[in-house]
Figure 1: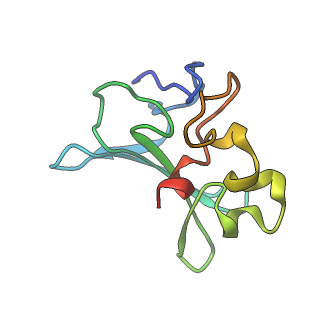
Figure 2: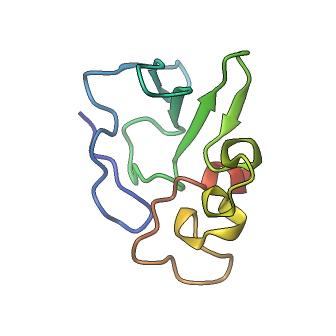
Length: 118
C-alpha cells in the first residue's frame, strides 16, 4: 500500500489500499475505483497523476472524482457534488482546498482541490 496524505500533511486512512480495485496506466497514472456500496450514492474514482512517486497528497498529485448513476464523472466537492450545500462546496469551505495565496489550513483535507483545479 502506498502511503497517502491529506493536503495538511495528515496521514489518510484507506488511500490506495490493496482492498480496492486499482491499476497503473502505461504513462504512470495510478487509478483506484471504489464501486458504490450500500449506503453510498456514488462510485468513487481516485487518480494519482504520478503513481507511487511523492508527494502522494490529495490535492497535489491525487485527485478525487465521483461517478453518478448516469455514468457522469464529477469532482469531489464541486458544484454537482455539493448539491447546493455551501459547506460541501470548495469555493465556500477553505478546509476542502485552502484559499489561493494563503497557507493551507491545519485541517485541510484537499478533497475539494479536484474541483478547484478543473
